[in-house]
Image (cartoon, rainbow over all chains, first blue to last red; front, side):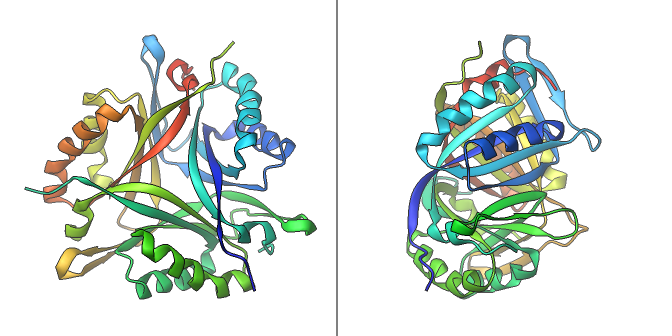
Length: 110
Length: 110
Length: 110
């Protein structure tokens, strides 16, 4: 019998250029996140503070959203770890509340 | 005039192999979810409990995220319904709070 | 040093046909959302209220999810702005709580 009760966690989503994906996933490995999911982004637009600089992504440049779910105490280490990346490259991080089924921790590999 | 006030619901996201999509969507049909959205996943990594088994998805194997929004009382039936699937196949389920516009219930088909 | 503390915001996701994307993004520009992200949707199903009309999307018709993160006071203007779109075309809007790193506001263009 699989335990599928729900547990409160934090969902962290990081949007970066596809070229920076491994920097993010290496960080997630280091803080021992249990896994991650990468979603391709079709288009995006961002404004750079007072400069109002715009960026738009076509089919050529790739943007990705990397999602992970971690216990709350791992959010700060992720923020800290992204500091270097975000000082050199564009990116955004979102944190939200989420409940996960415990099943995740006993996952059978596909 | 369309009513677009917001109502509290639960968002359920299930990540499974593309081959298992219909098992999930059939379940959503049975519990009478009003609809679902399927997003392709570019890459993913998961750890299998104490075995720490890794799985990585390339372009060939397909992973999908199936999203739906349901009233809170339908979350448990979904969890129960996924039990069989998750005992045989890898997968993760996330539940989070979301507000939806009532518009959804009076949607005109595309 | 980049400030990466977290701030409470509202995440708004709008699912529409790809043909209606610019209507949504023009609206987001008008209310001065700082940016948005567009994700392609592989498949979707919705029920139209009492008519129970179904719609299913294959590879030909495109559905997209447009995500943005805004301060709470901008949610109502988005709802109001979508009223005309939703009176003519199918679509759903989700609103949820999210925390963002302030980094977003000082983003360097990719």
